[in-house]
Image (cartoon, rainbow, N blue to C red; front, side, top):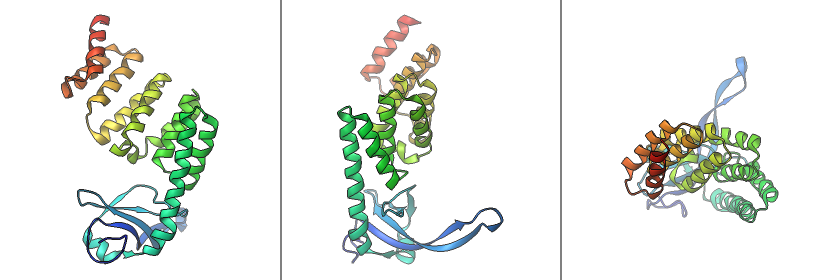
Length: 248
């Protein structure tokens, strides 16, 4: 269903749909479930799986993605091309421009301007992974461990932060945690990544580095062996392995 045109049954699917979903409202004794019409951004990946993401009040797809079957899409979702083209696409473009400005400021060392723009982006989409990583990196660049800790606690709860499209930001954030001597946080961060993404040679190497710098030599050796088992040609791991052999 080419949702750009919202007609026919050609793939890939991409666009905005409306559907009725159960929503929890109220608190305590007054809490109840109601049906509410919501807008959902729908996109099909290269493997054919269809993903949905609720559109927030700022016209941005936000929050956790969920899988939609083709049957469910056809039966329970109505395409809304007008909202897609007139509201969602412009809002997403403006959000991306804000984040790009923030990233440029950070790359130029203009950390307070970067912080301002990343916060602007998060006011539009509070669960935006790119902006959350960016804000955390700003605080780590400034060696502001207290604010970096606050961002870390938000990031570790976002499954999307550990998905492959964000791998470069994920790697930089973990390394920055370690370089700021936030070893406990870096190890929690890497453990969360391993839980969601499985074993990875660079991940095992970074865990070994964090363990080594935190004083756990035995743990560093154990994870260095895991890194080399996954990739015997990983140059950094081989160099660190030789260093550990001499040290221990």
